[in-house]
Length: 112
Image (cartoon, rainbow, N blue to C red):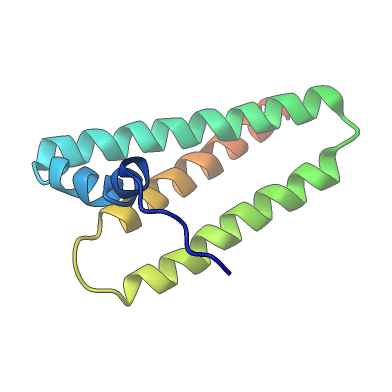
């Protein structure tokens, strides 16, 4: 198996997480990033509910995919809790999961 070439783009993508953590060192930037992630998750949850509800024949598949996505984020969270260092990734996963779940719940209450 051949090893991939270390191009500038490959190195920049590898450093993107560290750069984001450095940028979010300021508490206001960190909070704004969390709020943007929360609202993005809320938008995705509402969109999934609305689009799948309009199609109405993919409901079980969408429910399975949504539960799998939330369960995957919970399992990723458990692994990130054991790591030391900056908790930005953990906080962003929590914000996205919370927003996604609230978006789904709000869309479900609209149907009642």
